[in-house]
Image (cartoon, rainbow, N blue to C red; front, side, top):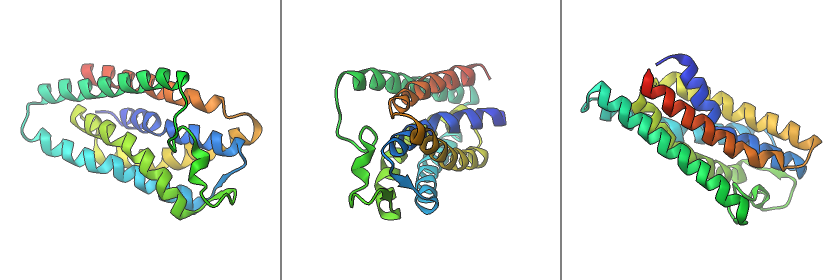
Amino acid sequence: MHIWASFLFAFSANLDNLALGIAYGARKVRVGFRSNLAIAWMTGLGTLLPMTVGKWILQYISPESARMIGSGLLWLLGLFFLISFFLALHKQKNGILENPEYADQDQSGDISVREAITVAAALMLNNLGAGLGASVAGLEVIPTLLCTLVFSMGLMEIGQRIGYGCSNQLGKYASLLSAILTLLLGTLSWFL
């Protein structure tokens, strides 16, 4: 599959980083370079491990079956993200992704590397299913991993800069965009 599919996957899989960055920026909580790097490595690991499993699975099924299964997994994940987005509009949750300020446990206004591990674990869980689906759909592991690392760090930083200048309401729509992009990637992988 083409490199642009890895870009699309990495962008979609890391939109939560953008949303968190906006939320942190709006609350004037800083995620420094080392903490952002720790988050990127953990989300990268959350992509690498399932993609490796997906490549192992590919040894036992036909390319046509792999394409259909991978597309289906991406579609299911996209629908899950879409449903989660609409459910989140109607209720308040207490998790790190919905209330990112919970990660700043010492109330310092800065996310330490130790606190970043908590954030990264939540983000990493989002990448597990997507990584498996992307791998089985035919995305290459190394380009996808590199794109994931870059987008993870970049979107967190961009989000913080946006958040410093506006409210965090913009960030809540990042999960809707992620759902749409995941559905688009599932559709594209069906035909490629």
